[in-house]
Image (tube, rainbow, N blue to C red; front, side, top):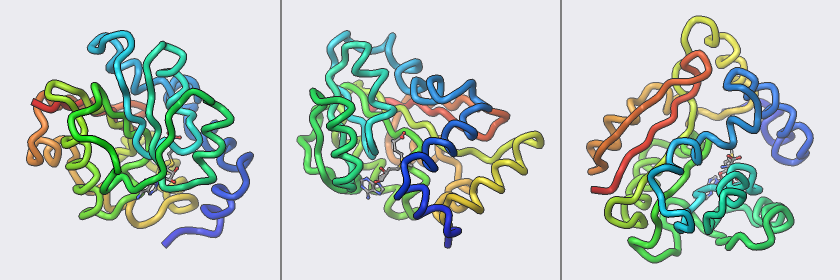
Amino acid sequence: MSSFLRPLAYRHRWIYDSVTTVSSLSVGGVKRLRGLGLEALQHRLEPDALILDLCCGSGEAAAPWIAAGFRVVGLDISPRALDLAAQRHPTMQRVEGLAENPPLLESSFAAIQLSVALHEFPRPDREQVLKSCLRLLQPGGWLVLVDLHPAGPLMRLPQQLFCALFETDTATAMLEDNLPSQLQELGFATVTQELLAGRALQRITAQRA
Ligand SMILES: C[S@@+](CC[C@H](N)C(=O)[O-])C[C@H]1O[C@@H](n2cnc3c(N)ncnc32)[C@H](O)[C@@H]1O
């Protein structure tokens, strides 16, 4: 279930961008939000490593990786989002497909980014997405995941409002789950969680052993 605002935000870019601008203030602005994945992993990767931006949307969170010189493949289910990504990053390889079963070679990526996308998936599909990440990462490769986390007292009300207006039940369900434990159960190693934006956001890094 979600409010009428969610489809509107996906249809009209300015609504999506405005919501992102406001909700990212708590983490230091849109640029910081988009750069959280790169910030966490850059020092662990070779300069021209191959990165998968899973559920890349229109390529906002791929931008810092491309600017830093990494080779990026963006996968999304939405052809419209991929067209926008193509306009933004003509050199980025784009793949239309399901994150639950990406049409990509196993062990081919040095890192995978999942930027504010995992909450879109129901629990069983979420597990499928994370298993796909494990399959697509090279041994020793890194996953970075940025997504919602149950907020602390200061951000609780804004987060509840945001979820009620723009998210579906899958986001609320994810807030009840412990993602670091799930990653460990699926076989990821070196799982580290950081809480940001008054605990409303989590950044998790995890490695394929
Ligand atoms: C909230 S947007 C995040 C986009 C981008 N990662 C960012 O940081 O701006 C979620 C994206 O997930 C994509 N998506 C949803 N379900 C998907 C699926 N099953 N497979 C691939 N992409 C999917 C949507 O099309 C959308 O572009």
